[in-house]
Length: 167
Image 1 (cartoon, helix red, strand yellow):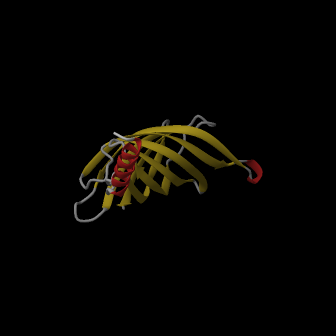
Image 2 (cartoon, rainbow, N blue to C red):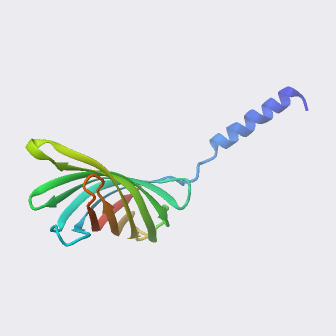
Image 3 (cartoon, helix red, strand yellow):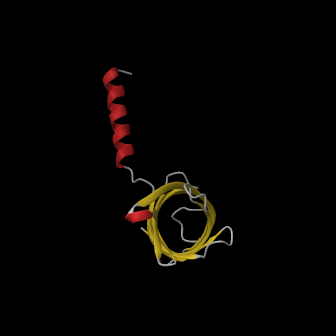
């Protein structure tokens, strides 16, 4: 085959690949949640928590990334948290029962002395389940996590209920 024929064949194949519709493998979702955080030991009172999140289902069928912001309210003191989780399990775009494990990093900002704030890096492990009816893209989610706050060494059990909208 001549060089120009190979080049033409390569360009045609590239254009055909580029023009083909891409499979809907990426899924985007947003959500809100609320719940309770209870200390690992019985020394501290429990806290209410709420927040919002964004989820990106990756092209890998069992993995999604989720970023979140949350607020903990314990005895009229607010703690702000940010995090990035990896969800492993049934997390795709399908409408059905989804179940997954959670592992991630979090940054908790707590009020310090004289108006300053302390930020610490921690981690979390947990599990979740979500029901997405076939007619709507709105999912109802329940999740439980063990949250470790790095600087203080505190461990919290968190339980949340949330609503997720999947695009």
